Amino acid sequence: MRCIDKDNDVFYPWVKDENVDGRTFRELLSIYDDNSLLNEIEKQLPLLNILVPDWTWIAEDAFGLQSWDLSVNEVGVSLPMNNGRAPVYRNGVAVFEIKSGEIPTSPVLIIKNNERIVLKPGTKGSDPEYTFRNECYDNRDGDGFTVNTKAYSYTEHNMTVATATNKISYNKVSSVEEQAYSNYLSTGIPQRDYIYYGLTSSSGTGDIRHQYHENLYRFKLKTLNNNYYFDSTGDYSLLVAHPNNNNALSDEDLQSMIWAEGNLEVDFLINLGARAEVAYSRKSFALPIQDAFIVKKVYERVKTGFLGILTERLYYVDRTCFEPKWVEADIDLFNWDVAKYPREYQVSVMEVDDSETLTYSFTYNGTYLTNWTVSSESGNTSKTGSSNGGSSTTQQSVTYTYTRSGTSDLLGDFWVDFDDSIIVGRGAGFALIKQYPTGTVDVLMRAK
Image 1: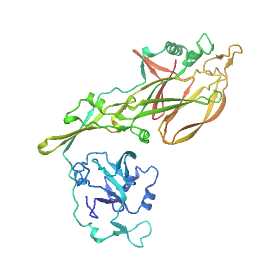
Image 2: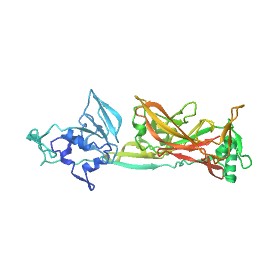
Image 3: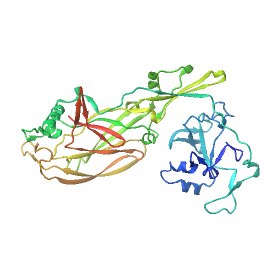
Image 4: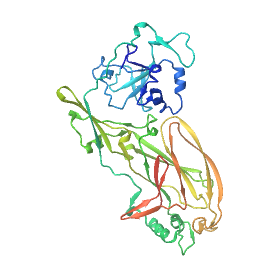
């Protein structure tokens, strides 16, 4: 690294057009500029600078440029301190905070203005010119230095974990679901027609059976490698294991020691339509994050010192090191009375954070079946014919609001149609349940 101003500075205006693996440094930054802010940043901060600090003069194990292990990808980015505090970001997420008097031991770059370089007087336009505040800082022709990496070696531990599928053991299938599936295979009658109304090839009309309900059975977060779960101080963070005496750990030990700290809360908003007593129902599900993911990979870093003697062993993970697994929710929702509820309902999934509240507004358009009657004596709904029975349908819409924190994330939604199958296949000792994807979450829905 060449210390152009006799400090560990990377002056952005002078390096933005440098080639890095076939692209300019600026082009690489633009990949992460989702909000197209780079042009405005360059305009507002013409002295933009990246400082690579050296704190080793304060503490031997502190971060410093010449002892930077360049093979470690986890690099923090921070700002000059404000009121004795400075947040440190990784991948756009604040992961910890440096307080006055604290010295980081891991790589942290400081984004700030360069104090030793200034704009030339009278510089205007899109191509500003720069000079040094004092010629004593000019080191453009001087020597730099090379980063000397420590003697680290790395190992990747891949563990055998089961991939979550939509299979469930057949002994968990209810008798009414099994009968509905057999009836569907032989007659083509939708499974919910049998479950809720007992419709078969020989019985084309049936009364509502109140003992059965829609059931949100399982859900699975598809990946940990996004920012949804890292945008609130209440969200979890990834932990590392630093074993005593630097002894190696087994895979079983690693899976128990390296984990995520914090809890996850997921809200399911079930949109019930204009005729229901309430327009939507909210079901909340809170769980420790280890109930939703299992460690599938761990990185091991070993540091050797003089004469190759092992001086440090560290195990760590990143967001790609976790395999999702099914979360058993088993939440009963509603008894599908077609006189009250539309022929399909929408489920919206939201990851909930603790912060200021915002109000979300939803408009739901429902399609209602018409092949039913309600008994004047019992008040029960009777349905004639499978699906819509060849009858027309009607439309009704409703708008409702939902209040949650401002940093909560909508994880997508899906629709469940009355004609959807519940069991979509079976094999030796198992049944395949229809899976509803949102892109971020997979959900298994049942009626039992």
